[in-house]
Length: 491
Image (cartoon, rainbow, N blue to C red; front, side, top):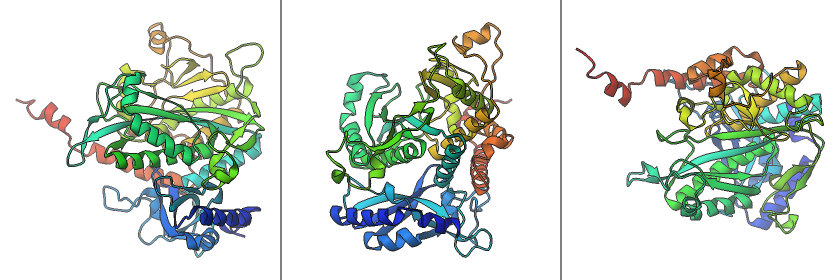
């Protein structure tokens, strides 16, 4: 059987398809968004009436390959990744991700995995490797089979709520740039509470939130989980914010640094590797499983097991052997990972504005916010050089590859830096900087076979084409800064 055929014939899938039909009828769903994720983290796909659920779940839907690159053209007018002569992918639903949209209860969404067309001459029905969500799903499965370890992840998605002018353009942040001030948090209460209401209805176990230190900047967090489910929830959260922005006539801004002189929006990734554990339907938000407005998968979290990053008995802070190996792998590849975590031209405005705790150095430490990675709590590492524009599926795959290399090759991360990194450098420490532009980061990625392998086959081709074109477009653009700097510089 082809990979597509194997996927639709996985044990238990037929029953899940029947269970989704029960939910469709019970909830009165009339329309379904079948969605997957593009190279930049956009949600793309098709909408199909729910009376076609069984046929679509088994046969899939078709869409042009280029949709994995947003169906955008490069600076030369060519479609990125795939030309108009390319075949159409087959999108196959993951039934356990089916959930009702709380803002229009006639509609549900389901995440999909993408496959090559059945009639392709080469690898027909194979997994389409430019499908970043499918890549993470399969790579994590292989990592677990190889090491017996599960990657769990929690993200900290900062973003800004902006006011609009009459013509719909951004008009500053909705609140003042006062970090942790409850009064500013309160000013955005109607917005944040609506986001939380929708998020809980779609399976996000919201645990805390605060006002950050840029205009209109909020961070709302949910419980950490399996790396794929967390990536799905980050995508869902962005979808929710976009909807709430429409309802309040605001802009939900995920751009990394829209304002100079104040902090940018990061998306720190807190990661750990676990043995064992059990998937449990979260009952905090629900009275019973019968109350779930969708399938249990969207409301499931892994609990328990052994956290292999926990310190050993000899040191209350220092991670155990697997944790140190994982940090070693991360430090080895952090330059290439920057191309994924800081994936836009604008991302590097955040790294250059070093007065705002920008993590620009390839080092690690305990509770040290001046390094690219810190041990933020026993058993948990925080990767700080990631911003709000990150594609969490690519990031998850890249982290898996770095950890795999660290474990396989027993990478030594060196000793943790406990000083402020700037003071350490003044004292003579030599520290490598992260790439400080998108172009430099793409070069570091090009030279790193381990992280490139996390983007198998066509995924790397599409990512490099898309991001290199973005860099070239920027370098070829005359900006207001150019005019201000050079218009009157001679004679």
